[in-house]
Image (cartoon, rainbow, N blue to C red; front, side):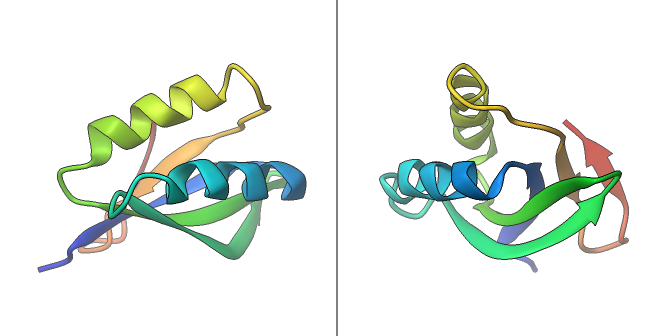
Amino acid sequence: MIDALVYWIGLTEEDVHFFDAIISAYDGMASVRREYRLSGGEAQYKVFVSRGMEDEFLEIVARFREVAKVGSLVCEEAADGTASTV
């Protein structure tokens, strides 16, 4: 069983540090990684989100969109390798 979901979030290098600081304030919710991939010219950073905390995470992303440019948000289902855009 996997304890976390993998999300990829499109952010600038500057904004990923700001986003990480916000997420870090919520103990056990998620872990922002500096690992990234390029998709369509966009840098997407890897975020591990604890199962059961997805709604809170998505709410924070929605609020973060108000102050920063957030690109795509993709949830990667690790078990079968599929991904869904949020």
